[in-house]
Length: 511
Image (tube, rainbow, N blue to C red; front, side, top):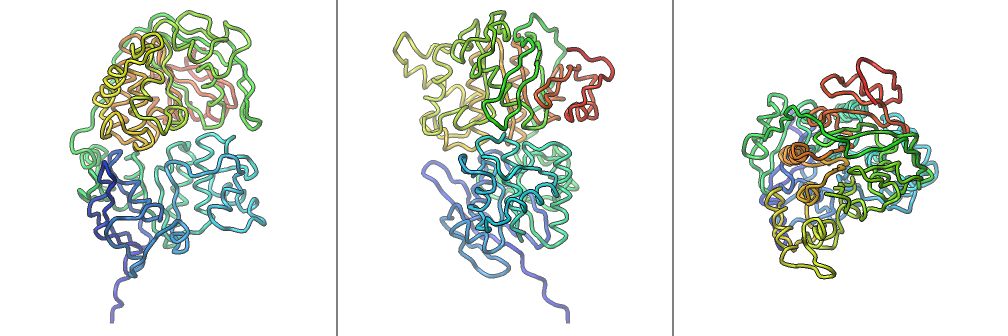
């Protein structure tokens, strides 16, 4: 007699979750088998993260049923989820800034602290995600914090692993290592729910995909037999917008760094060592590199949060700006636009409304103030224009920044800076964690700024992004900046070698 088939590792039936202004999940059904790598696809705000939080016990559904290996369960906390064997890597980090990596892992997992540091070192090294367990979290870069989230889950030997945008800030080599790890886990029977906006990853790794649109399941697909375009159509219901980079003739230098060296405020950070660059009006200059190689320090020098030794070390629109702070740099000529990699806290104040967040950087450039007075009508109109032009999913401009999904908040921050039409735009990780449609919109906005004569500097760990929209590419490694190379003459191999710190010139390069 043939044994009955094993029940799904996890089965969701009729899961719904409503908030006052939005229906996040609406009658969702989903099954995942033991050893299956299953993708969940959808635009920003489609309900993916809410559904994963329900599975992990962070959020409780309003209705529906969850079954674990055939038995109905109630997952009312992350501890209950972990007790079943569920681990989760969050898109937005859930780490205590003032504690060490080891202390964060101990708190989140309940693992004994004795010997935990050595276990973290061993597991992180084995999976190609090295991290120092004794470092304080506030000193870690975005990419290093992502490593902590991943290693924390791997330490728990999960039976179901939820990965929410796990490769957003990993190098291609680290992604390959992670995929090898996930395939091995699946071969051992671990089920994996994988959420990513990188369609190439989905097609390479996943066996089945469930597509969410506006909180509902809109279909299923086998990613292995789909194309990027067909998966994008399933997600957004239309063709993926293109982002061509037309030929251009760069103008005068709008942004210049002259042999800038700067110590990091973080004792574990990376000092800048003689960084020089020029970005001309009408061009996009891309900087690649592995997280933690001086990106944060460079961004602080560019924004004015770190002042240079000499005024002439930094020039913006022809003006010596090395001794000017952030507000003064924004006021130079048409000003400096700046998009930090941290959305909440630096890019936007979480508890403030979208309108008030628009006012923070747009007050002068968009005419939202007059003397000491705030022109509230213009502030609200400016915020509404950002929401409309950048397709931000939100009830209206009064919504708090922290109420938006990560991708929608990123669109709002990018839109706020772009609509100010700055002479110089600096954007860090502009499409981190956003869906394919939003990424195309954001990249198109940066290309449009280039067409208007702005000098655009993009710091990104997405090599595909840099190759798509940049005129020139350089690499930041160990606080040093490589020569730049025209994108048409660059290769992944060359950029990859530069990322290791080997700046040996190949072909035509320029400083």
